[in-house]
Image 1 (spheres, rainbow, N blue to C red):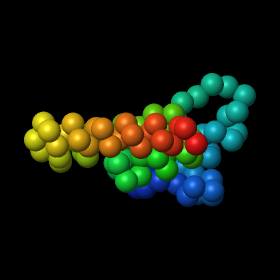
Image 2 (image 1 turned 90 degrees about the vertical axis):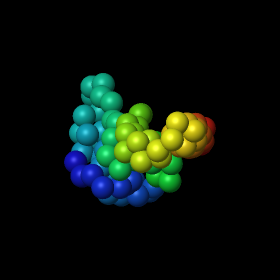
Image 3 (image 1 turned 90 degrees about the horizontal axis):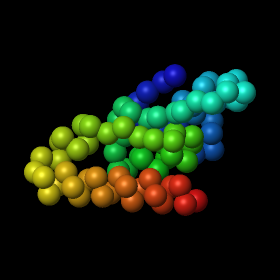
Length: 84
């Protein structure tokens, strides 16, 4: 797998492709955990991640109010992506 940004929305270059395609006969979970933030969280969900892990985006926000605002953005982005 690769890291560094969301895969393309049409599925080409999906970092989940090697995990999802050949392994369709057993249960698995794809989670995006590196470089995920409000701007790209939805792209990860739309291309196969069932969860995202965030740390840096939250800690860089600084104050508790700023951290809460980023967390709300992330939740909103994931909900929107799952609704499509």
